[in-house]
Image 1 (tube, one colour):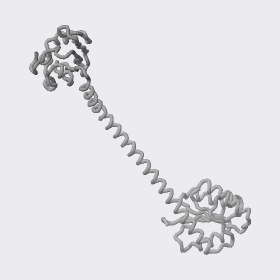
Image 2 (tube, rainbow, N blue to C red):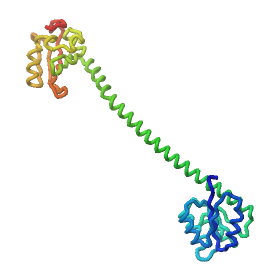
Image 3 (cartoon, rainbow, N blue to C red):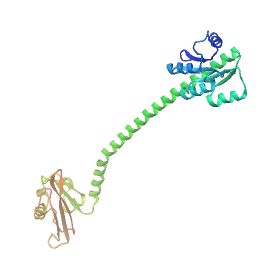
Length: 281
């Protein structure tokens, strides 16, 4: 048992209350007594730690059933026991249904039976209290687990959001490299920022030899007037740029960190453009 147990005994007969005190004299109980139901309710209101209520059935004023109805309504965690010298069936049924009593014991009672009943009621009360504690602990644990899951989900979402742009960049880079036409990106300083494999093949220069170098050093002379006009107009498309051979160059300006860059897309028939070295045209 957890600490001293408080038991409230309610009976309008003083000798009954004295007998109950003597009966539990050797037990680790605190016995509180009341001579009426009204007095019993006052004690319950002033002391919220009463675990067991033992009440007479027939009392003047508020009887035991009415008293236990109030106890059940306002202190549902108490164990309720009825003592009565009128053990008729109707009284037992009414007490059980209305007061939700744990046990009905007739007067005169058997001391051993009453002691066993009180101890079983105490075990029942302790078990209920333990169950409530476990439920609160479970509720707290579930709340902690919920917060952990929310934090984990937030961390996963953050990681995915951080990883997604990089994944998109890799996919876009792969797609650009696979496009069957030449693509060049030129940064605001005029350096080649991107060159896919098709562009390198058409220009007959290794892609790595183009990246980072000024476009004026690595691109054929035919690109110069096109790039100058593109820079001024923003969008430009030219067909048959090489000696009447079939081919085309298209371009547009793009915003790169609030500065103007260029994207060139081109294609032409084989041998339309003489091979150039990494040093320029």
